Length: 223
Image 1 (cartoon, rainbow, N blue to C red):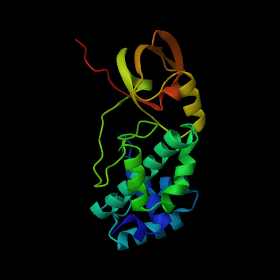
Image 2 (image 1 turned 30 degrees about the vertical axis):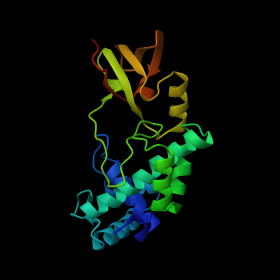
Image 3 (image 1 turned 90 degrees about the horizontal axis):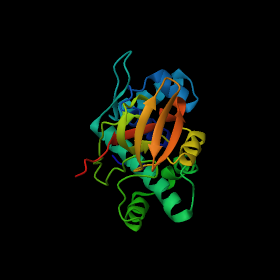
Image 4 (image 1 turned 180 degrees about the horizontal axis):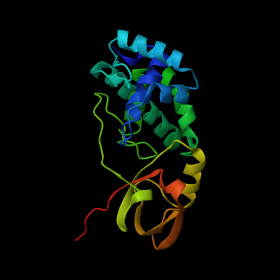
């Protein structure tokens, strides 16, 4: 079964269930799905029932839904659409990285697999989107990482792996501070309220609420 063979609601649910755990989060419960989509738990239960009947998820009473391989395939197809569209909007149409998420949420449902593959080729087969999230391949393969949150990082050198696109205001503030994917930084100090970093010789103080959106990887060894 392909993404285009299920409803937009089903596409959204499958993508949300997969995305919740991509960066180490907990599985998404029915209550969290209701909050995510602004609906009732009764409506969520109906959607999950349909997904279960289509063999796209496995339901166990009082446990979060689990994607089947078929459900995971559709989820990754939607993630691929979303991230390639975001990349296209930034690189080709001049959007800011804090403007593209909501646009992609709409366009991902209208785009065909052919269009997405053309965008992928046009962009030179990018491996990550403007926020640093990995772009799944057409075969569903996707890179996985074990990142460190800037809000929890010990002192030392790192590179920015990914910045959460959940809040465009946060993205704007981090861009102003120079905290962007692939940027090298050194964590100098950390308290409960803020993290002090050095970026290109400039000392920056990042509020803890902003630092919680930044994912780091260890800096590459030199010499």
